[in-house]
Image 1: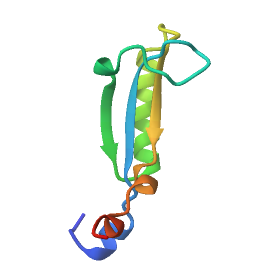
Image 2 (image 1 turned 45 degrees about the vertical axis):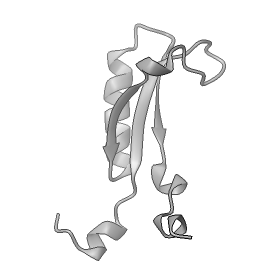
Image 3 (image 1 turned 90 degrees about the vertical axis):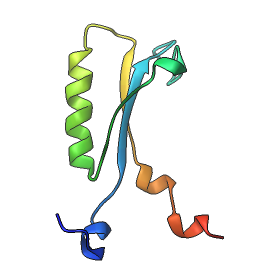
Image 4 (image 1 turned 180 degrees about the vertical axis):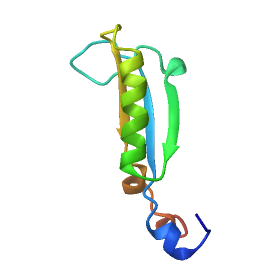
Length: 82
């Protein structure tokens, strides 16, 4: 995909992370040093595909959870300059 303003406008950054939780009722990781960064993706569809693959690979461990973070909602590069 070319590096153009139109291409940038369609990119919505999503991060996929996961790890073992302390308890099943809250998203609190057992050991933050072992949180896995699966990847950064330019669309929700790409992130969901990666999330699903990683979650299915760890299905035998009930405490393992993977999450899609909508990073595009958390960052505002224009606001950083203020």
